[in-house]
Image 1 (cartoon, rainbow over the protein chains, first blue to last red):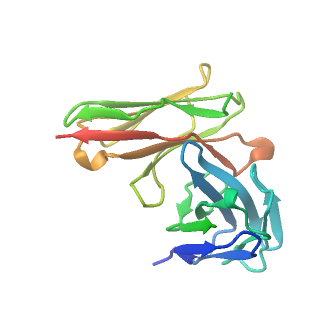
Image 2: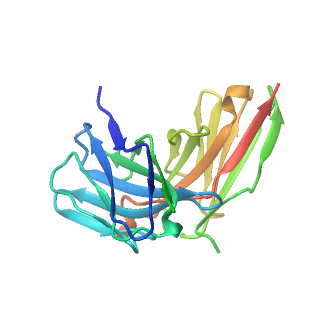
Image 3: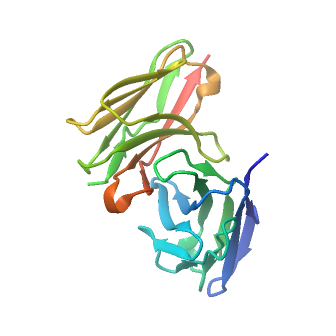
Length: 112
Length: 113
């Protein structure tokens, strides 16, 4: 069965370190998204991609970057981790931009 | 003003009752509307989508959309304890926001036996 997987599930890091969260989908979806979820804020869009070599900034993109070298993967990099980036991160994909999002299981990131 | 706002909750209803979840949005050109359910510690899953004014029913769930009032709601009939979760309203504005969803902060629903 097709799926979307995130790794690691949990990550603890120190401020100032570079961290990369992986997202891999086997749906063959062109559209991929990264969200963060914090109490009281719901899900907020960090970056998104509509296809290979396409990347776009979301509403909370500062301090994050993504690259899309193939259809399956959209890794999220925190250039220099900050305590404010402690959050749960969800990767999602969709076949059509206005259609159902398929979410990964999430990554709980703690920056100490 | 937040772009997508949900009734603050938490909402508690007895088993068998109707749960009513509400959402308002600020962008008048919004085109697509979704309700996601999220169990504690899990990822969101889509339960309803609605694109035009009126009601859309799927089993015990009914989504209602009123674009003039910029209002979308979700009704859960015959609520069950298994419906206890956080419900997220999501809106897509279309245009330059094509493909991007804006989520509300979520409403926690508890259905007690």
